[in-house]
Image (tube, rainbow, N blue to C red):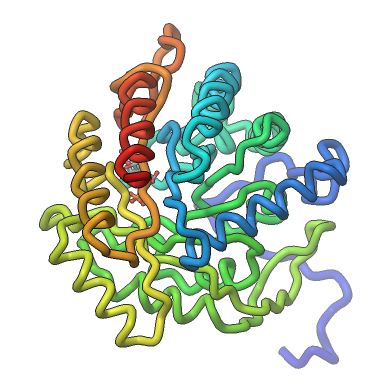
Length: 354
Ligand SMILES: O=C[C@H](O)[C@H](O)COP(=O)(O)O
Ligand SMILES: C=C(OP(=O)(O)O)C(=O)O
């Protein structure tokens, strides 16, 4: 139909398999309710610079992104953060610790999608409360003084929260997505692109090249309106090796092959090894062994290795979602417990000091 003869009142057909529930607050509303103070904003800017310097190889320290697979209990997250803060003080000359504060989870098929989507843990999917609770918790964690890490999954979520983390991942299931590459292009933080679940490096390297460019894309403004967004490009990205269906990819051969592929494409050879996921066959007790091998490579002179990721919580293992949850135990992937995690961090600092 010619736009000039379009009737004034048009009924828009809705897809039959979709229902819109209550509308959500806008990013501006949530940020006004939970603002970042000027001193906190300045501290986060400084932390982002520090993380970028380590990722870019200008700061010789090693980045350690560690924490729960997912946050579901704010109280446990705060206890974990307090402990991490003390640990940071002991290792500050060798390591920069960033706490995993993941509130969105990508699922292989279906499952609980994270505190942001289902904060009551009961399938009620109170997204408005999840947005509020996630931002409130991130503010509390950031106020304690730790830099935070997240995985950006639903691109619209960034509008509500992207002033708080200092490092972010694009996960194995989304590194190939143009929409996520566009998002990273406009983020003011270092970002790690993970290799694909099949082990493919190419998608993560393509992602780094794409995210370094300016883009114009479909988005949402602070008032919640659809908007054309333009981005400047983000060169502060790195490859995260997380293993794949055919096995791990943290061994020296895999790391040097990844470094060479990055150099051949003109990319800064910055690599983080995720000691969890397919690099440990999702068996948390294997994470310290992966870490030990990564540290050995770094000590042997592999400068492209700039960081590691560990999945760690107050208690080891995992538990199924139920009405009687144990405090400090993951409800998604199994994690290392606090004592083993702290021992890993102290060992890493000692190895890298020598
Ligand atoms: O890190 C968490 C999980 O590995 C990821 O969310 C996939 O989980 P799933 O395979 O249990 O769905
Ligand atoms: C989902 C995660 O990892 P991956 O994308 O590597 O599966 C994660 O780190 O929580």
